[in-house]
Length: 65
Image (cartoon, rainbow, N blue to C red):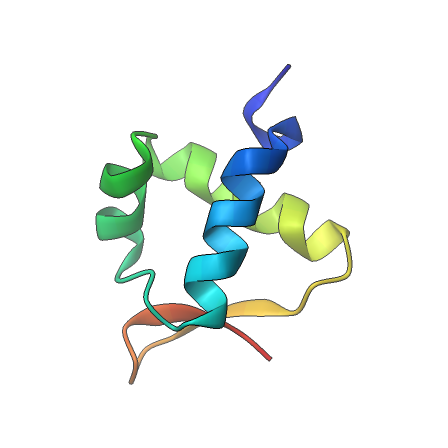
């Protein structure tokens, strides 16, 4: 299973984004234990599932619209 197919990781990112508490990308990838490239792959996989997730610079967090 590759990283973008890991449902638990995606659930965690979605939950954090829903609470606007992911932090900056570097903080999130450190929290998850992944490299930044894998984090962006996870974000893209979440978007591919139809969830509108984006990074908010003022909030310094990923958010779900």
